[in-house]
Image: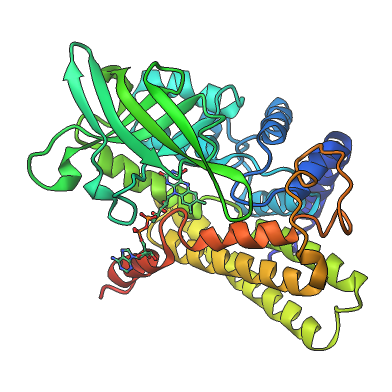
Length: 394
Ligand SMILES: Cc1cc2nc3c(=O)[nH]c(=O)nc-3n(C[C@H](O)[C@H](O)[C@H](O)COP(=O)(O)OP(=O)(O)OC[C@H]3O[C@@H](n4cnc5c(N)ncnc54)[C@H](O)[C@@H]3O)c2cc1C
């Protein structure tokens, strides 16, 4: 398979490159380079999504009827690659890649009409309320409860590891609405506004010194029953559908290519692009090609069936471990410049003079942050269990 061949695709690539030259400002490119974890700096990511939205390019993977571009898989691949190579900020996945597809698949007509245009236009910032202090891999054991009162639910409990909850205006949340029967049969999927009285967000600072995740507390939080997606006690089906998009719905190959291009720049500046180090770079390039082929398979499956399917678990592991390997080699490449701890200097827009070059500034923080990639979105061990069962039939 040649991923990069046809003339029409070359024309499309030039169109994307011209757009990026015109619209991706140096500040936005800096935000892309300052991305350490799952998300780019929030304000930059929202600003960039609004620019893409104005062009009609915010959600290439969405159906045209909901504001997608109608591009071929190859065009989407080219678009994602060029964005990464140009250091564009990553768009927050919680709206576009997660709750958006879930609403398309399971929401009512009213919910689609209200939420989808807002997600596309970056009018809201979404966060994901799945995990709880006692429920991560064993998500079905979740305890955050929603009790009926009139037309509302009253929510009490807590969610943890909630990415960017500090910016969230809305959350999609799994709550327990029944304790009868199997655990999975008592879970509902509900949408709520983060400004609702009774919600508190407490920061969790990561090993890298970043504020990316949070714990969220619910104390008698009143949410209309009309905000359920997929019906009461039907949340497990919606949650699983969404997780396939979380694990498989992103342009992983493009992200990896961008990360490898950055590593190659670091290596070339130190004469490390040959010899043993060069061989390790080549091995990563081969891994990335394998991830891209898997991604093409997943896209083909999505187009044929409307589902990403369990191969999303394979993609999540292979892309995540490759990204981690790139970050490990990046730390090796910059040697002792990985050592200084400089969280202020690496803030987006900071004018604190860094120790070392701007390229080196985020390498160690990114390495540390990417350790969490084996766990976020469902741990690698649990993804292997899913593949053993659903792909290999074991
Ligand atoms: C950076 C980051 C961002 C996150 N963002 C969000 C978010 O926005 N919203 C959200 O809801 N959650 C989020 N999470 C939570 C994430 O989904 C959970 O951490 C993950 O599902 C694992 O759950 P846990 O942390 O409770 O670990 P546990 O489930 O306690 O697992 C601990 C270890 O035991 C292993 N293990 C558990 N069960 C099995 C099994 N059956 N077989 C083999 N091994 C097993 C796991 O692989 C893991 O190594 C985030 C996590 C991280 C690290």
